[in-house]
Length: 260
Image (cartoon, rainbow, N blue to C red; front, side, top):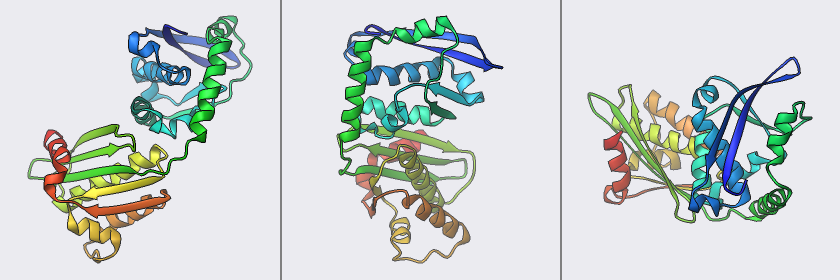
C-alpha cells in the first residue's frame, strides 16, 4: 500500500490454507517514496526478518505474479535492492506464479495492492529488464590468520558506487594464503548469487593473483583445491578480471578482517 507493506505466512495442507503469521510495517518518509517494485521487495525482506526462524528452517514459496527472481538478479537498480537481494539469498526461497486463492481473507489481502500500483510495478520491472549491465562490479578481498582465528573481509562495490561489506570470522585454522583464497571464494560466490555478470577483483596477495591468472603454478594440495573452486566460480561471469593492489589501497578490507 502507499504507506505500509505487509506479508502473510500461510501453510498449505491438503488444499487448505492455514494462517501462521501476519506482519506489517508502516513506512517512514523516505520509504513512502520508494517505487512500487521496491515496496514489493521491501515487504518480502521485512517478512523474512520478522519471521526469520520460519525462513531459516523451512523452504519458502513466494506466490507472486511478478518475476521477482529477475528483479533480484539485477540489484544494481539501487543500493538497497542489492542489500535485500543478499539478505534473501541466504534463505531457501522459490518464486512461484500465484495460483487460485482459496481463502477470501487472503484474496482481500492481495487486493490491497491496488491496480495503479500493479501498473507502476510492471512499468518499473520493464525498466529493470531494459538496463544493460555493462559496467563491472568491483570486489575487494582480504584474509588473514593467526593462532586464534581466521578473518575474512570483502567489499562488493556496484557501478553506481553502492557498497556491500562483510566481515567473517572462521572457526578453523588457515595460512594467510588460504585465508585470502577463502575471502576470494566467498566474494565470488556472493557475486554469483546476485547474478552479477561483470566483475573486477582487487586482491593484495600477488601469489593468489598470479595463481588465478596462470602466471604461477599452484603446487600445495590446498592451494590447488582452492584454485579449482575459484576457476569454477569465474565461469559464471561474462567478464572477470583480477589484479594485485597495494595493501595501502585495501584499507577497508583490512579493517573488516580485524573486526571479523
